[in-house]
Image (cartoon, rainbow, N blue to C red; front, side, top):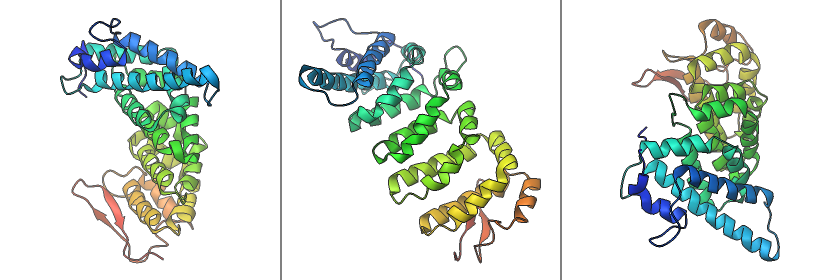
Length: 309
């Protein structure tokens, strides 16, 4: 991804706006100072998550407004703005500071208390930071390796319609890193996906299915190992809860997904595991009459349902 070389100061308008600086105002903050400033705001909001009274509430509202400005400034540094492209050194400074002192934890805790626009922008900021390299390492991956409980918090977001889309977006950027994906794959959360996907509310259901697919396709070696070790309970639940879902969209998406996992040159399930699976009573072929595998131009196969019971 294009990185950034500071003074992203072609994006300096955004930086100055984010820091309260102007032509005669206070000196604009560096990327690292911007993160520290944002972290202080997040700490205040984390300590005062609910509306207060009197002067404290006025201060809280101001902090929420300041947070919006700071997040927008970070986004401008990482992505650039209309006046210039992002600059590598600025992005490196911002990334290095962001993964210090639990900034990501504070962001996740405070997402429910941000306004909608800030929620959207903070997911874009993290999406960029999750991919940034510093000294040939990926700080996001290193941070998640020692803070895996954050993945538990993000998974719980599927139960809250107001934050499901934002938490799941952050979660998908987390599981781009194998250490995070393996944690979720081998946790009890995997079984919960079968319930989340069946939510009557489309938004959390759709987000759950996208995250489910990302977990099972992003890292082929981890996915293959997971299927080999867990195909029994996994396909039993897949069969009874998804392939037999009363929701047509869920059923059809599930057919396509199982085809991708099981057939073609990019399949993730070993032939041995697949042979054993086909002998099980919950074989995924059973409920679909007239279904057959078809193949895309990329060689990825999926089931094209002709008739679904």
